[in-house]
Image 1: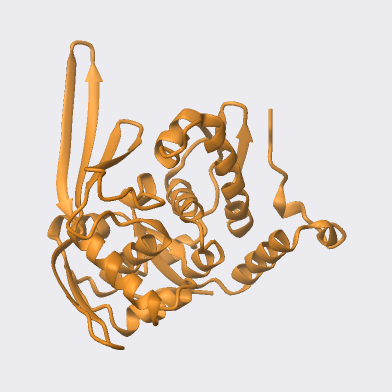
Image 2 (image 1 turned 180 degrees about the vertical axis):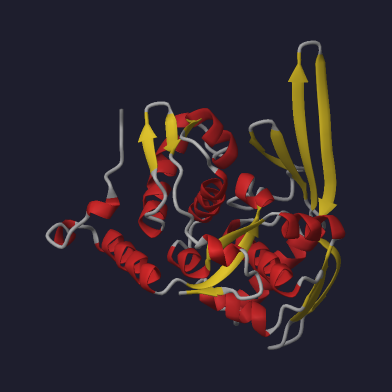
Length: 301
């Protein structure tokens, strides 16, 4: 059995031996523990399934991820597939605004700039055009979520087609790009039915890696619902998080590399790497449960 070290047991004597990067993550984790800061929201769709890490390219007609019996299929619009850290940050901002305002109508003005700054992306200059590009990609991509259920002699497929945006307006002008987005009713209902609380400070600490963001959101979701210890197999993890890796060993190495920072930032998550996969134990949520019930007051600590 392989197990990662218990990062909660790191004491002052051990710290000088840590790499600068790991030591910085540990310091950030302690800062978050003392001052959690703003609560943001993802949603169940993106906790269970996710976007591409990199741009699949214009020649790819669709892109899929699977989690158990559920498959997410994305078909790009004219701008291409949404992908990477920025697209994930924008989806979290959309969910956060929808929960905060209880409205489908989003105005990505000061609130978006403040949110992106809080998660380590500063929407100015070239970054502003990247923001507009990913908003266009998110607004025009078609989403199919399909579930397959099989019993002896019978197979049932059920699914839903949706877009993130029902309407959008993106204005490009020198120094003052502007956008307005109206979430589609099915997507808005999904957000409101199953918001997943996360900490903006944790997203900032894990920034730069879409897999780290996905793992953090996934663990935040799983620990809010997990009732008993369960093991997620390497095969299941690969279909959910690592479809782009050519070999299982490549995925496993990338997964373990990205899991360590997530465990440092979210130390309450009781997870263990075992030969068969990742063992999850019921754990405290990263956002206190009381804050889950106060979606209009998005700050804890």
